[in-house]
Length: 347
Image (cartoon, rainbow, N blue to C red):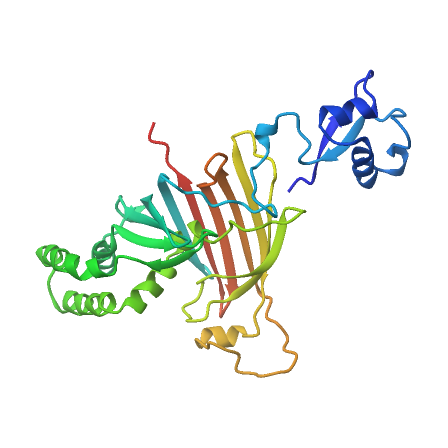
């Protein structure tokens, strides 16, 4: 991400006039430029033939381009009254085996309470698998029974991170209608077994919460990027993602960076890159281990995986406009998940 801006020096300009233009001190301008330029272009007292200046990224004449941060350059999560329609594409790759899911969803902010925001999530389109509407019996059963979950209500914390499913009680009420519609289209032992599985799932709140916590769309949308980015507009830490079926998700050491300037589309840009940071080996993950089978005082960390995100947030509300997340890990073969979420303009 760009660390500075450049100013083209005009003939009549001086260090004082340029500093005044960007509302910074002459010493600050000179110091910043000298720390970024080559030796021959350094400023001693005033300009001596410099053709361009390195200036701080936040030094702009149009202050509306600046992202409005809170204390500590905290990106503020302010989803009040938000309503967005998104197109979602999820690609799942296991070695040479690749599948792509497509659907549309809406996200509506409902209310705030006790440092949590509540949202309603709804799937509003058919599900497409590899560009075709699902038609295999197993895929159809999965899609049609999932209707019991929607509209879904969830809570999200002040950092924009998924917290919990909040309307668990209505799933059992909806199930009879969903089940009745299902048996109008299908019958047989396979359907009976699938219905029993769904009934068991929706009767256990912990199972439903885990199921939705592992939803790639929700995890990408509510990853928790509304944090304090500090003086240099970047932070580092650990982030987990449900790329494997394991109660303890793989952890990635990532660095997030936010551009303090909105782009030409009035969007806030956030990018992040990281590497797997696990004491569990590929063998451990293949066998579903929640901890490493080998206990060592100074374990060799498993770094065979990567994590990348690119977020574009609305410049006024800071709510997501489009998102890209990519995560991979080495198992028997490399597994990779990529998620694209893009707002759909209905105008």
